[in-house]
Length: 365
Image 1 (cartoon, rainbow, N blue to C red):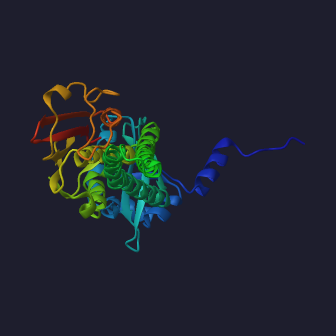
Image 2 (cartoon, rainbow, N blue to C red):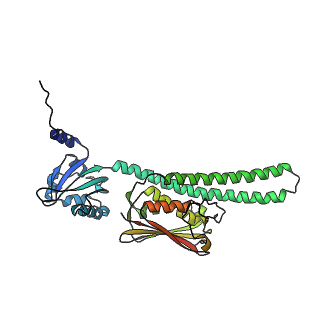
Image 3 (cartoon, rainbow, N blue to C red):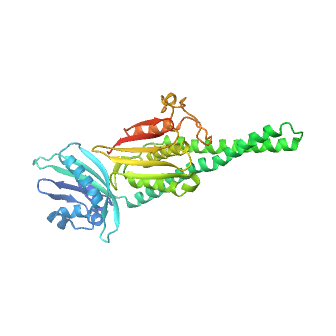
């Protein structure tokens, strides 16, 4: 007897009903969902009947800061400005707990003429929390590395300088043991400086070559976290930090880890070329289609003859910092590469003896 199998439609319907992912079709003309699977009510904590009676219930669930973003994306899909789009945003669960949702939307053609929007939605709260912890520790690590490179390498530079002067003073003294001790201090401090610099440089170079992973990020919040890390060591670094933004929250689509790395490099350079008790100001200016971030210092500035080719790899414009911090000439090149990955641009203004301002402009989306 021939074995009979359920048809493909039955199999797909069974799988869709069991899926944890929300699957839906929305009829824009009738302003109703024509299909949702059971996962819909679990994610939104709303019945499909209540949503079809009042679709605005979904909008009320979305975090206020994300509503405009979601509405704009939906409008662009509806008008078929682009045929599909994936976004991430926050919603409130029934207990006021925030959830992160990943939403993939598609514009569909329908024989009836009514425009349809279909898509998938997933609860990605756990993934987001994990990513945020990773980025938090990555940003902290970068700040610590920069503090390490300045605060630990600085004293070693001083020791190395003192050892060099001592070597000259004792070279005529017939005391081989003393000469050996001075030489040991000099070589040990020099090796320690090189070790610190190589470690920091390699860490930045390796992370800059990873694949780009863009997400919608509040740039003000992220930059504030960087500044707070430096402010915690403000006495050691001996600089004054200031952050200003045109809005409390400014959202951009960036690879947070890499973009923060670029900002850290700019701040690191500002520290390197600014005298103790100097001021380093970071500003974030939101424009219609882009965001401009500026890092300004009142340090020693860049001489005119060193400004050309500053963003090139192994540029001849490289020079040691005020405390003698060495430069490998890769910092600005990395910044330029990261900014260009984000379809942005970077430039600077500087005058010797009056400080420098570096600008990064990137599109919002």
